[in-house]
Image (cartoon, rainbow, N blue to C red; front, side, top):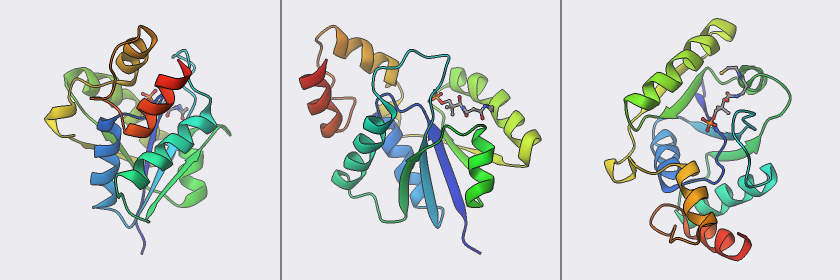
Length: 161
Ligand code: PNS
């Protein structure tokens, strides 16, 4: 049976750390769905559709394979998406103990809600300090974000912000 994993997140914007995790997930599972979800706890920089297109561009530029689909979900719980497509696994990147503390309650709630398990992957330590919120801040203040994001994201933010 085909194994489908969902890599969810705000991706506002997608970073090199995210791309690293998506690439690793694509090497493990038959199909990977990258799902952009609005997080009401965070103030958004980019519209959801732009986040989706930037991820698609970054994956294409990075040579991340054809078994990766990028979409968005705004119809309820993330596990509803998982049920709709038959995914039993969520994949999250873990950079530090802070991420473990943030992700653990969500993982347990998603398992309790629908039996969807969460697998944590460790990104390359080179990306351990990279976050979307840091990128948003550096970009807003005119700093260089090219070490942290795919080229498509850097080009877009440099022209838009
Ligand atoms: O990149 P983020 O902001 O840390 O991603 C968090 C996200 C979007 C994955 C999380 O907020 C989420 O799963 N939202 C969907 C709503 C949901 O299902 N909530 C209940 C389980 S956590």
